[in-house]
Image (cartoon, helix red, strand yellow):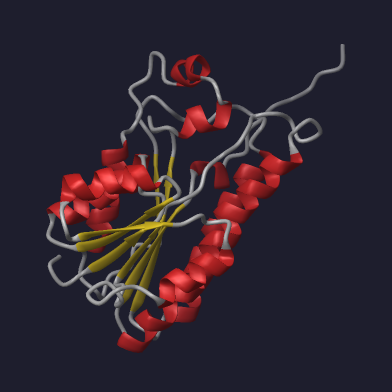
Length: 250
């Protein structure tokens, strides 16, 4: 990994932070982005000079484009892009959900991911080498009450990843979509805005950890360049699929 430059979004917590640690530990240089600058500085203090912290809001397209074109020497040739930043806001049914929450999820999970990918991808194509790992969700495949726009944004990530593969088949640039199920991070706290409710999500279950997902990302990145993993769907053993909902009229 000593020759790899890894760009990780959403690195201030959860999957992104664990991914930054995993690649630094393997010898890569890592660009770690997020909105919380103090957490990025703490991460650099922990991991050293091979981590380049970059305060970025995925909803600011202009800032994303500017950052991608102004990376410092030693970090400009991104070879692995981990589009991790994103999240869910709320669990209200569609007719009661906050429109601002919907728009924030679309701007982050869809628009920001697409803008950054478009900014980084030409360099990979020019060098004929690269890997894009998009972090989706099982919500892309399995709808549930309250998942409305969040699930739809992750369905975009799924299909966007497959369509990137179609465009890049002759460019030696790989694309993988990783779709985790239940994992204990700040995800539920951000979504539910209540620590007790967030804790209840994981009660009685051994969920996946951020490190589990980071290790999966790292595994994909270490495979031979002639191999592409299109899609990985992963869940804890205690999670599976629910029955179809049927509303019965008495």
